[in-house]
Image 1: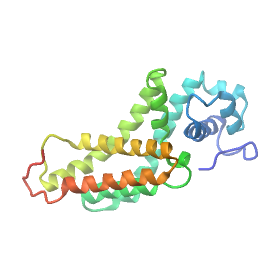
Image 2 (image 1 turned 90 degrees about the horizontal axis):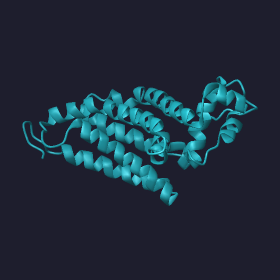
Image 3 (image 1 turned 90 degrees about the vertical axis):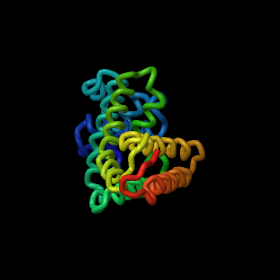
Image 4 (image 1 turned 45 degrees about the vertical axis):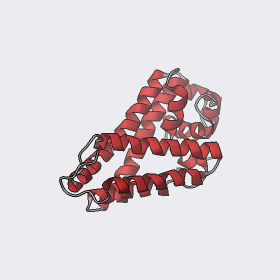
Length: 213
């Protein structure tokens, strides 16, 4: 989505424009470095409008995490990886979908809630909690397909569908950090490719009723 500006004032109400600006600006420079003035300028609204909708910058951070969850949930719910008949194919296609999203500038594909969590987990517990709800809410959507793939392959052992879903999220968030550290999106793609190979190996040649510890 393009960021609304003063020259394009009709793209949503002031609250939505502030949330969209928070999504973009915070991914670019982080939560701590982002000021209310910068958010207002990016959204094309007054500071009075900001404080009409949000009691504080922290309140904006909480709302931004919730807004991220809502908008990304729609993106993933409508993605084509759900169309595969076999559950393992859906899991692998999900990873492929995440790889395809790594495009453009770093701030265009990195994760808002991952960025905020790293900064806010101790100082802003309300933001951390909102980010956790978004992050773990997303991983929970992966669990049914992973569980079905495990059952189809006869896999049981010390790991679960939930733990693999969380691990996949950990790799993705780590991939974004590596890309930022190296200022190179290919580092994120490299990590996602390794994740795909790892998941393939987990399910490779697992006979029905076999064990995977």
